[in-house]
Amino acid sequence: MTTEKSTGSLLSDALTHVSSLVRSEVDLARAEINENLNSAAVALGLIVGAIVVFLTALNVLSAALVVALTNAGIPGGWSALIVGVIFAVIGYAMLKKGTSDLKLSSLAPTRTAKNVKRDANAVKEAYND
Image (cartoon, rainbow, N blue to C red; front, side):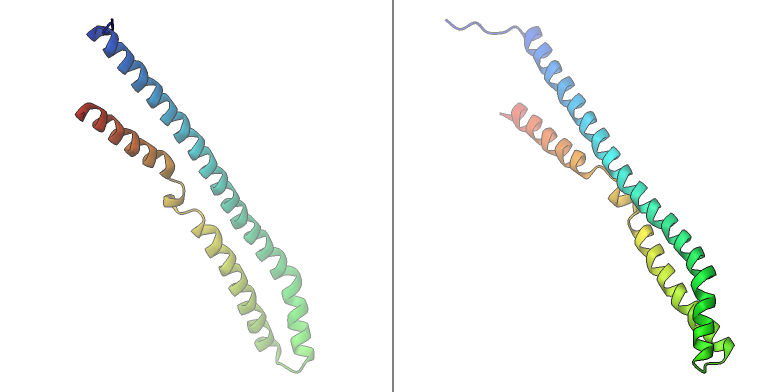
């Protein structure tokens, strides 16, 4: 003899499951956002590192390279321009890498969105059967 659950009991069970599912998805979203924020912090560190390298390199090595090029026979003005362009290219490459790692699309909780869609489809299928 099977005992059927009352409507209230079924509704209570459904609400408990939905509540648990929502809590799980919120926890997953929170974890994924924290993970993505850590990646953003690393990208910001790259940008700060690029600035430090830029300043240090510009102040110390540029003078030495200009002198070396001048001693090699290149006029002082051209030597300074060559060295400046080299450092500008290096700094630009570092800046592009850091800013590309900070794109908002890379910070979005994509796994959570996929799980929510999957869960919504599962709920639809369960109620359509």
